[in-house]
Image (tube, rainbow, N blue to C red; front, top):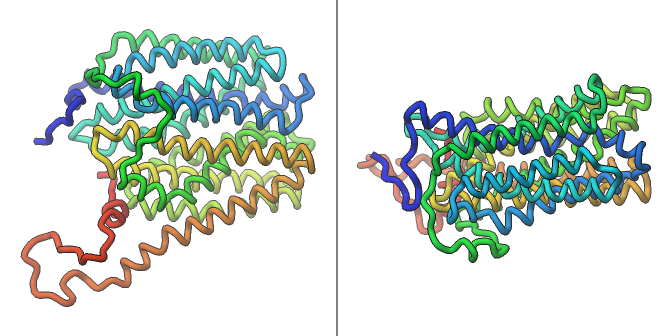
Length: 441
């Protein structure tokens, strides 16, 4: 029988434990749905308030940077005060941000709403993700890592689709979509208040909110190995999320208003099942396949711009979604599975810091470039940089695989093995082997 790490409640295996797991997963999904809900509304905001491409990416970047600050300061807070208090506070802030969105009258209010939303999402992402890890069922190992990978893209897909439908069919969409989200978050807060806590409180809460990153050496090695791939896919996601609607109008000027939202929906809708169907692959193989898909995705995006082909644009978004899902699933699994249970929450926060930096900073740079030289110039530069990053990722991830294929079998130069484990030579990098052979059992 597996022992329970200090500070953690025993895993729940009864049906009563499945409800908390589903609740925490739904919180992650709803938070990320809210993060993508403004995407179909960006063209309307631009027209109504005369906003530039840079303004839109600043709004988008404000969310991501606020989320990063929250991750850096509250990433391990739930390890000390409990998951539930952090999540309840985050949901309250998220409701306030939705109310601010619904009453926004200009750029300043929009930025303020995104900052509040980023703080709430950053605080809740680490706590909800760690709660899922706390609730791992020994009979279904690997389910929390899968949920942490699939919930964000599922949420983004649901949010952008729902908002697109509201823009297309509902009256006053800029109010309706946020009112619906307020109702969802309020219901989740009520359900969470009666859910058992998954960790015991421990001292050090004030010390934990000092901005810091806690990344064990094994996780740092895994993140370094997958870093270029993670940056490439999240940067591409940031482009489609912030500048996607404007880019869609550039490719197809006569298209419907909701087409911009559907491009980002295509990316996220493909990413979600990709996470699920690649879960049986080794972590490094999954990340490598995703990185390979990013290169043609960037090329299709450029082709859509020069050939005025919306079909090419949607095909590129679908390939980008496959790359996003495969890389996110493989990289997250490699990073989180390489550390003990007591360090998973902090490790998860560090992974998301890199992800959201990659999502926000390049998008802001692209917005500045688009404001100065036009989106027709900024888009090829952005796509080219992403393709270069993906190429670096392919080379980085493929090198260890080539080395393993060239290595002789364990018994090539030795007698019969006496156990199932072979001793590594002094120059064999053990951390690398442990990361690359991580599986989602």
